[in-house]
Length: 189
Length: 373
Image (cartoon, rainbow over all chains, first blue to last red; front, side, top):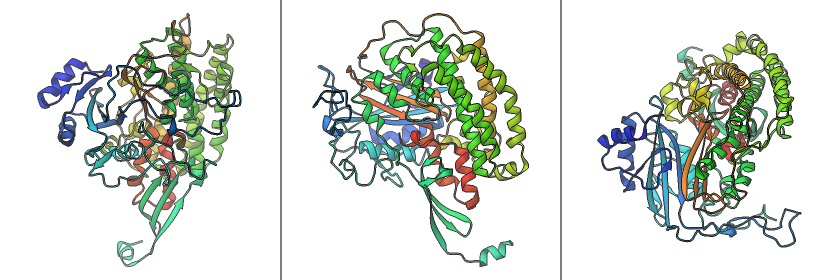
């Protein structure tokens, strides 16, 4: 694997507007993109630098602890638990942790020949969760963006076919949002 | 047919469903095909039939419980699934598995790769119309599953690789049995080549079909044998080594044209390389504990983010894990190779004949449990 500092200086020459992220992905070079609208330019510059492999697109909802209403909880399927016990532990919020109403998107680009990885992070607000699509630059972005749209509800502007991909048509909401509440459907009975 | 005849002959386009229940889709996958005569003009893969929401389930489970969820993605090769989650969680927890555990992890993952490629080899033969190789492949695969059963009690969903090491050391007689298998299996691969690899009918069905140029393979984020079949050298074991893979010597088999046959051939060659690695691990298995000291019963890693990826049987399998200091992962994202490999189907199938759809779909080697997660 390529050396992180060397890689950082190589990218900084071409992309001075990207700063090192204060909260990096452990062991990998993580850069911060301030303005989501600048994503296509940054991605194109990275692609020109040799990062032509889009390894992953992910997103984190920083709203806080996950809501228990997002899960199907009754009837209790674990027979060893006492009557009325909750089958899963529901996490609580960590005191002092900077939760905030925003999505943090993460793109991982790889330069296969140089064995180098770079992660790009960008924060967008939950209300207007929309970023430009990379499907024109990387065909691999197509389904990954559809997955995030389906599960997180993030819009990727310019995607040719931003439709649901994993969840069924009747499912309401975006399940990986922390405030997702499950609406009962005919399969819950 | 002459080109003028092709132009003058008008055929109505027809829509047909391939799947969701069809033996050649290897699971519940529906492909909506629009065909004109024998030619495919549009292909729309429809997935999600097996979506169980493991990323959401992980958010209310402890880290140890999540290992169980990982078994259910790629159920044909579950060991790398266990491994990649443990590697990501260990990065968050700042735990390092002891040398013997690392060697056992490598051993199990390579055995699982052979088992998975054997399943591909057998079922791909059936897809093309050769039934015999399947029987041979399953004879050998059974022996690997027996080895797994002996080591951890399960044949499919192992939960063997745990946070900080492995579940338990292998039984004393296991290593001898594993050597026995390696000695038995080595000459079998040459047998496969005579059975299927160089079979003229098989080659005619696969050699010029489903060509993926290297640039397309990279752009579609393919990985595993699908990427290497196009001649792009990318193997996580070499590029971003984990569990001490840099200590073992093995080659990365590459294809030339990116045809179905190239992808098939890469997998068969990979079995040889896996056997090479297994022999090296068996030759120098370090002594010592198989579990790191001080792994908490309920781990609460410090807030942070980690990404780990391994070369699974189907390609670059990655996990992005976020912790906010609670006992459950705050966010788990799976970079599933089958999911990304399958996406190219919408482009790859267009322009092919209906009879080649199965050959192309089979050569991508997907597991729907991993596509849908």
